[in-house]
Image (tube, rainbow over all chains, first blue to last red; front, side):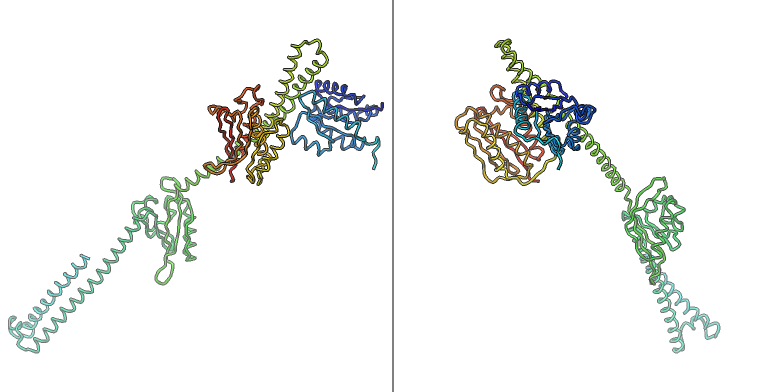
Length: 145
Length: 454
């Protein structure tokens, strides 16, 4: 099976565990990488180990993160030629209009509010994976226009 | 007048005496000097020509005396009139409530009224005559006054209604509203300046007070606005943190409870599974509570964007959305067409959603469910209402309906967290309107709100 890497940027260990459980149930991605704050997420792409890190097909990004917040991570990834095409789905507790507007302005591909109900959460993660990993045609490794 | 009459009488008597004296002297002189006979003889005019002459002389003297008397009378009476006019003028000057003074060309005082004399601290106008401003209590302002005086005297033009300070003998400073006009003689030559002023100290003090009050009021308003801004910011960050941080543990409880249920269901037993189901329901309920609270706080924050809104169309749109989730398709909806209002469309949509959703919720299980959106006339205009024929409420608790977390029905009976009507009221209040309810147990409820056009 082709390597379908997903990068989960999540600081809450409970949410991480629940997300992993949801991924496991769905069995759509086989390589889940986790960054536990904004700085780790940036380092994944631009840090010393960047070359050994596979480019993910999808990034699930929380907004409220320690060190560097989600909006800043989004901004930096969209500024760099190497990362600007990677699909990014915001997965957050916030449904504040300002957060939603800013996320889209900075170029997120989708915005999902984490539901309290785990069943709904599993369902949301399943649909996201199904769409971005299966239905959607991913951008090529090297994007040059 | 009396004086001049006396003088007239005096002159008349003198005239008679002088005439008699002249006649007698004439007789004496005639008898002695010309030896024309005895004194008595000379009184009897033997020569008719001479007697005629003497008579003429006597008459002439008498007439002259009378004319002199008349002339004296005329002079005296015009003097009297002048005195009367002056007295009248002075009493007028002393009666009017403004200060009056007049100065010569060399800027020394010629006269004033009593009020002015009082201000200057002298007992009468006479005490002021000849003095200049440097010699009075307002020596500090003398230059100012004299500059204005000179302007009026040299230009010949009036200077009306200007404000200036005045130091009184006790050192206190008063405020005056002064006018000055040039004094001209019959040839039009300026020979001095006439000034009047009104004491406006009290008015000035009031103006000052009002200014100070306004200033402190503005300051207080600014302080309050700053405080409110700070509170709003705090509220915003509070809501943000509620939205994020309160929901995260709920997700964990719900999610791991679910995991427990899925993975260890057989080990838990029926009771254990029941507890887990209750936990699960509680987390969902709390999630809704948080969402509703957030909605309520969002309604309080943010600006109201009013526009002309077709509120009937809005009601239908809300009804269509709510109908989609409603199992009972037999509910009859009735909306009065073409109702408009000047309001924030999004917020009024929230109001209608809450009210119509309540109407659906609280009429559940009834027969012939009917929900009406319409208007009725109230004291000062139009009230919109949502009416149902559902469970209604006990009017005794009417006041509690709109407070957050107040519920008149058990959760088991009708679900909800009790924030909807508080949200409705807050939105209507923010529009400057009122929200109230009427109803009775099992007789349905009507929720009214007004949206004043300002």
